[in-house]
Structure formats: structure tokens, C-alpha cells
Length: 115
Length: 110
Image (tube, each protein chain N blue to C red):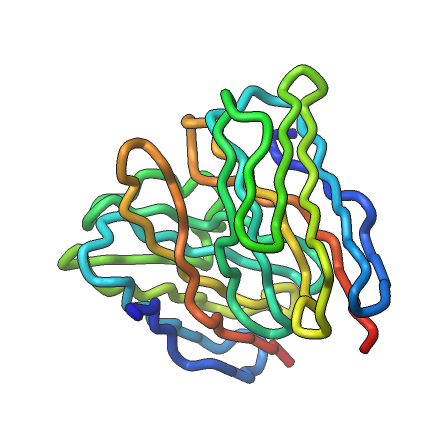
């Protein structure tokens, strides 16, 4: 069964350092999402891509976060510089958006700890 | 707020019992979805119910939707220890990506 791949699974960094997360969606899924999930809460959307274009980045802290999906396939989320409050699980998801239905398939996530 | 609110926040039951969790929301929706998340893992889609449906079944899962009360419930029958996870409702409003609630943490005691 096809899965969404993410790496790394765990990342520990010091504040003010740069970090990057990678996501490879399910083949054929044009829509890709990055979410941030703080412990004990639900996922919150950071950015949504349709192919290589950003559809929604209204909740992305653009002073320190950036995301790209250059060829409309895999995607990278970067934080520079990292802050203590960025410690969270970063989840990538993809969907077909078939028939207007947005059923999302999630990767295993990257657990970020900022010291 | 466009996100759902799950109730209860935490639920502990014995294996074999039924588990019921609820989701209330305030906006109009196209459909409502339920996802499960095992500790430290990504979310897994469980079931989707459209706004014009009232009840849906999938294996041991039963979902109801009352659009007049803006609420949904997820029932897991004959629970197993492997059902221990967090369960999230997600709202599809058709206007932007899914919005997730804060979840119900289910503990099934063997």
C-alpha cells in the first residue's frame, strides 16, 4: 500500500539553528499539506500545495518558515531560525481531492525538539 | 472557530466495551471525517460522512451526523486494546483544507 514518506523521523536542534523536513507524497496526489501538531492538540495547517503552487499559507509564520514543492512532487519545509516554541510534530499529508472529497493520507511525522 | 470540538477529552474503558466520542462544530460542512492517531504516529483516515447522510458504518465503527445540531458521534463497538489512540474529527467546509479538533484520547484496558 502506498504511503507518505517523511524524513527525518526525529530532529533535535538548538534554537537559532536551521532545520529542514522532507516529504514525499503518495504518487499521483496533486495536493500536499504540511501541519504542525503540538502535544495534546490537533494538527494545524501550515501550508497547502496544489501541484507546485501554494494554495494556502495564511498560517505559515513566513518570517522564519518556508515551504517549497518545486516539481510538484516532493516538498521541503524549512525553519530558520528555530525557536523553542517550534518544538512539535510536523506532519505531511497528501490527497487526490477526487470528486471534491478531501481524504488525507498522513506520513509518520517528524518530531522536532528545539533546545 | 471552524474546527470541531471533541468530547470527552479523554476516555478510559475496558476491552469489549463500547466507546463513544462526540464532535460539535459551528460552521456549515460538506462532510465530516474521523481520523485515528496512535501515539507518536501520523493520522489514519477512518470514515467519512457527507452532510446529507445521517449514519454510516464501517466494521466496528458507527458514525452519526446531525447537521441541525451541528454534531457527530463516533461509536467503536467491542473495543480492543489496539483501539487505544487519539481520535480526531475533521471538518470539510469546501472553503479550505480540513480543520481538526483537539481530539479524544481513548485508553482501552485489556
